Image 1 (cartoon, helix red, strand yellow):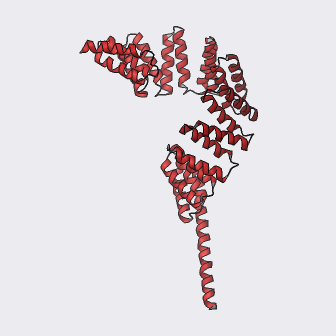
Image 2 (cartoon, rainbow, N blue to C red):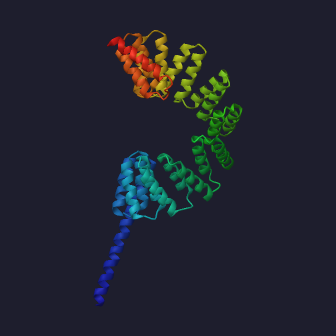
Image 3 (cartoon, rainbow, N blue to C red):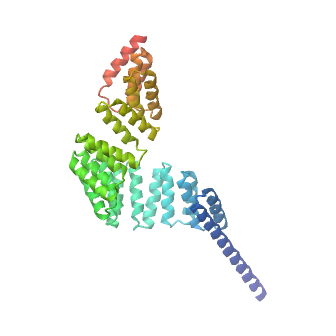
Length: 383
């Protein structure tokens, strides 16, 4: 009997040694994976993390690391599978639920994301980041009331968290509740003077209220925090334009481009200002800059089409207008311009089709009856 007891103890001891050996091997592979990530070798890192999980399926660090690589590379099906496994192994880990929720959210599975964020909040009520993410998911679903509640709960649980005030302020701003939004943005700024995104949102609120001097004040406040913020210079350009100060508007748009050479909207606005100043060649240069900065920037192609049509270059005009539609099939202004061009060239059937597309893509319905009358006239011409 004694010998049998010793034999059983020996088996258990050997099993424990094997388990510890597997755990050590798993950790070694995990550490190798981390080093590969630091070197930018994610393919090799993925292999090491997978081996680590095979050797020790309880090593949650490997699951997190592997799932985060998939998230970074927008492989959301893969990240979902990894974080689902992690949640099954660690159902009481709020971070696992958060990461699974993020995978769901990126896949457009908002209800599932809300469920997982809610579970993360339940498991760790003091973690306001989960509440903020929950609010964001409710916003995506269109549930404004639940989103506001989540952001407000985050503020109640941590009254000095600037992110919670900022996110609630953004939602108020989108709802047109500018007074409440301004209060939350000012609170954000008081908690973190370097929270530079909030300055631009204050600028936007003042701009929408036509409070241009207040908007400029916030712009200069932002420059003290981040003088190289391209959106700040762009927004200042909008304000100066509204004030009729073209010279300073141009300077601000150019500063925006200096700090972000891919800022297509800044090139576009410079092109529009050049048009207003009667400088078509300058306008062409800036609109060309806009599409070089962003090959899918439909407004830039449309403006180039309009300018070349004025120059009498129908072929070039049509190419640019079609490029605008290629960049954005619902860009109604280009459908209208193509229709007008076709009509002037006697291509009545093609013009009628483009006018119909203009009606279906245009947000404004003020001139719809006039366009329909024009379509009927064109149909009479070719029928």
